[in-house]
Image 1 (cartoon, rainbow, N blue to C red):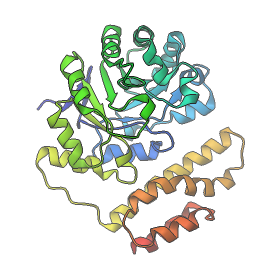
Image 2: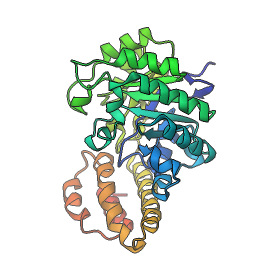
Image 3: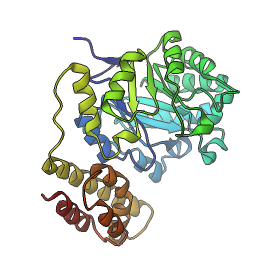
Length: 336
């Protein structure tokens, strides 16, 4: 049987992909999402300048284990030569299956550097970046982008041509304009138009809130894949459910004990990462427990959505000193 999605020579076992999200798509979460049915996962966005210099901080962002594969290194920058050097370093790490270029992040500190959504003003530079990465490494190259910065300056067709002419293996289109960030409706009709015009796979992204909606978007708009972002936070089972719906199989939601085991795995993995980061930054690793608990709450609110006792737990998180403290309280809330 043919794979549901293939990017260059890379076959994926599911057309549902985990979106890169700063502060959320840590290594532990990516591993869990892969195990639960995500066909491909992406690292948090990392700087090509930091990677080309082999900065310890940047390399930490790009930590990835074998259980996550296939995994994409998600990079941002503005200079083709820097991208080429960074891609070569990424390939040498031996942990990535493709390189993804960010051409859609609208955050001002990224755009001011000419990176992210700022690249949409110059499709020629996007083509040059894709070509540079292709020359410097053997990994497939994809581009994550948006239709443009605003409706008055659409750039998606020019961007698509730039990616194709540069030798890109796929394009991921977030259907909101850059100025809208994550607000408003994603334009899936426009994504469908791009799919019809493209010679490479097109993955749609934006506004997915449920597994049923992910399956519906895949079928209705005839995209090659669907990327899921915020709906996966605290609900990695969305990938298993979406895949089950697509295959016409029943999906059984996780019981509290199974939900708790995933929470434990995720928080412990995040804590280990925070300890390693503290050492890189020359901070006291003993003080990272509270930071891990506070950062994890964004996930925990999803894991425990609708569970009585979540509000009280939120008030306590800021004062907890270790993951064990938090897990004991989670166990009480879930009654496991």
